[in-house]
Structure formats: C-alpha cells, structure tokens
Image 1: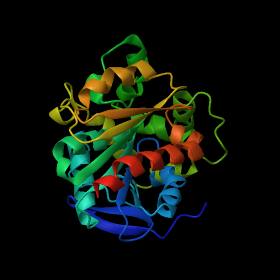
Image 2 (image 1 turned 30 degrees about the vertical axis):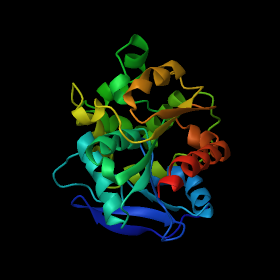
Image 3 (image 1 turned 180 degrees about the vertical axis):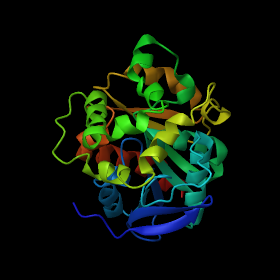
Image 4 (image 1 turned 180 degrees about the horizontal axis):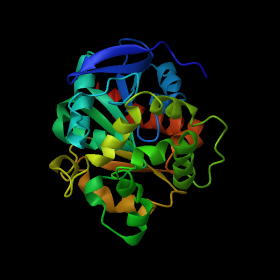
Length: 285
C-alpha cells in the first residue's frame, strides 16, 4: 500500500509530519497513533475515509520521526491533548472528528477536555475512558511495560535484537492475530532514528499518579469506543463500566481482535468507523 506524499505543519510549537487524503474541503478526521506504532497504522483507514468524502489526516505523534523531537522533552498527556487541538486549528478546521488509538486515545481524551470546542465527535480505539480504570492484578500485569519503560535500561531493552520487543508487545496485546511479515517494519525504522526511541519512551516516563484532570473529567462531546473481544488486558466489562464518563453518550463498538483490532480487521473497522462518522459527524457539520 502506497502512502501519500508527506506533509508538514506547525502546531503547539512543534513541526508535525503527516499524511493526508481526501478532499481539502471535506470534514476533517484527525487520527492519532499510539505505541509501538506510527501514522502508518491508519494506512487502510485513511483511503477509506477519503473515498467517503472525508479529509483524513494521520500525523506522526511528537517525537516520532519525521515529526520533530520537542526540545523541552514534554510528553505528558495534557501536552498530547494540546497537540491534537492545535493540529485541528493548524489544519484550518473549526472542528474535527478525533480518532485515537493507544497513546493517541489518551491524547484524544485529554483533547476532549482541554479543547472540546474543536471536537465534534470523539472515537477511541482499545482504551476505555481512563478515569474509569481501577487497579487489578490483571491490569497491573498487563501494563507492566509502563514500569519497564521508566527504567534507565529501557532504551537498550527496546532496541535489542533489532527491536524484537516491539514484536513481542504486538503479539502480547493482540494474541490471536497472525501478524503479517513486515507489519512492524515502519515503527522499527522510526525508532532507529536518533533520539526517537527515547522520545517514544518519554510518553511512559511522563505518566503521573494520580492522572491529570483531563483524564479524570467526564467527556462532554459525543463519543464512541472500539473494544476488542480478543483483548486480554482490557475486557468488554471495562468499557461498559466506563459509560458514566461520557455525558453526551458513548457507543461501544465490539470488534474481533485485540489491541490492534483496526489492523487485524481493517475492512470491518473501516465500515464501523464510517457508520459512526455518518451518524455523528456529518450531521454536526
């Protein structure tokens, strides 16, 4: 699959690289990736959105080459949320549908609190509202990488054996996925760039307890969340428990697959995403 020409835009004091497809005057859909991942995680979704008349933009998150590495080293979730709001503005849109996976979901939740005027519809993938999550042996064990990535040795561990840990994480988080050869090549290439592995780990090192208000307050914009039925870390019940955090309602879309369900079942994911946008986004324009 060929990606469109890379573009650049300045937002929140940083130069972001991004891919874009679709009509320039179409409703903006901004899709944010997580870890271990890149803007290429949306390579199947972006053209599907464009074909439906949306302007689909998929940036490389801060610190992920060719987006700049921030000089101030800020990767906290509020900064990620401000990035999302600033990107919408810098791309010339009053409002957008915001789609986020993994850390991109964290950024999207923060943006929904910090810049609700910029977000017409919120979609998160594989992460329920983070204010609803409660410690449990299952969650602590599944999220043990958060502690591993805060160690001084984390960068060496991540890079060892040609970033084999990336493949381990993908298999762990999507245990029923027969991962295609080369699926993680794009993120490994990014992590090889000077300073980028440290930047990606910076997201984890910036985590604070308790989490900031942006991840604890209820969401006031219409929302939907994709839940993987094969996810061993976040169960369907966790999403149901999170419903009270969405004041404008939240549709839970159950999908086969694990953490990377949008890549495991791209045709089904795209169809569900387009259905959600047609009902909740185009009508708001």
